[in-house]
Image (tube, helix red, strand yellow):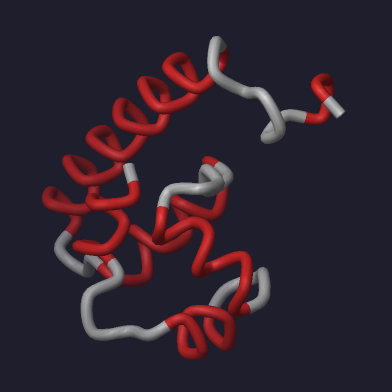
Length: 87
């Protein structure tokens, strides 16, 4: 997921991401390094802003949803310190 997010955010640093979208620079760094999953609604917002062509946008949204779903399933058994239930 983090690698894919890097691709869609190409050309923007964490400061610019924090200025354009919700969440601060630290949180964006976590999304980009994979230590935290980006919320689905925010991922959709990023794709919609970064991809202007409608057909490609739909394809990227579907791809993003699939990757996020897989990342969430993989993380479910590995949550350790990440999820609120484990704190």
